[in-house]
Amino acid sequence: MRRMQSSRRAGAFLAAGLIVAFAPPARADAALVLRETRLHTPPDSHEPQRAMVNLRNTGQDLATNVTVLCTFTGAGGAVLDTQQASVPEVVGLADVQAETIYYGWPRASSATCRLAEP
Image 1 (tube, rainbow, N blue to C red):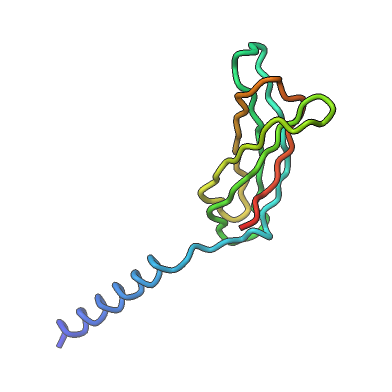
Image 2: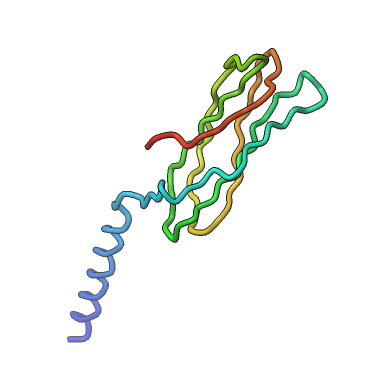
């Protein structure tokens, strides 16, 4: 009798694990806030520029598969390039750093970043 009870428990545990494993990841896009974007320009003009992004998950839920798009602009606001960075997950109430890299020429004078639509 004990074997049947333990095998039922094991079966229920495995079934619950399969449900969790194949469930779509939780997304909390509305809870994500892009706090700061900073353009890092190294002194050596041969090194790429970087847009450093600080994201905050203001909610309790896990945010997954987050994509950040950063547009690098030059003199007069001309768009030079748009790069993306992927953030696999952001736990609830946490800050994360992401960066995109601009390898082009001319040098960018600013970078603006936004969250990509899901």
